[in-house]
Length: 158
Image 1 (cartoon, helix red, strand yellow):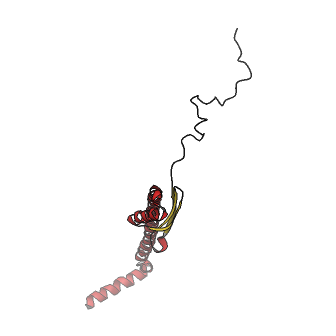
Image 2: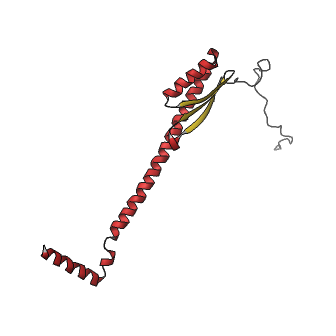
Image 3: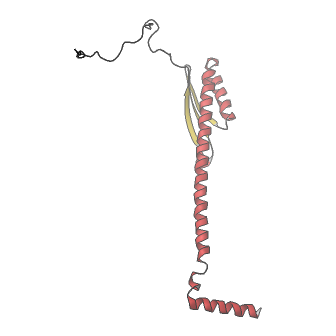
């Protein structure tokens, strides 16, 4: 054991004489610092990814719940909102608000926990008419050409 200690002292004294001892162990400190920074960056990327997933889950649940409520509007507002709540729970979301105005449903759904809680609003109802004109004004003639006529006649070669 004494021989090892003497050898260690000789190495240490020789290192001090050559000036190499001052940097001894600095690579370890730099490595630990770099690993800590990479861990923080990785954690932030994971948190952002989780936030995106929660937002998409809430949007999908809101869309499906609004469609379910709009589909069941003839059964009454209570029954339609109960159906929307069931669909939202099946999508791992919570129905926050459900309002039926005629055939149009307006729902808000919440998903996630803690700082990753997201609330999304969606509306659903019947599609509008294909032709915005009333049926009695619709005709089979093609629409007129919207370009104005050329006021100057084309030159003739001759």
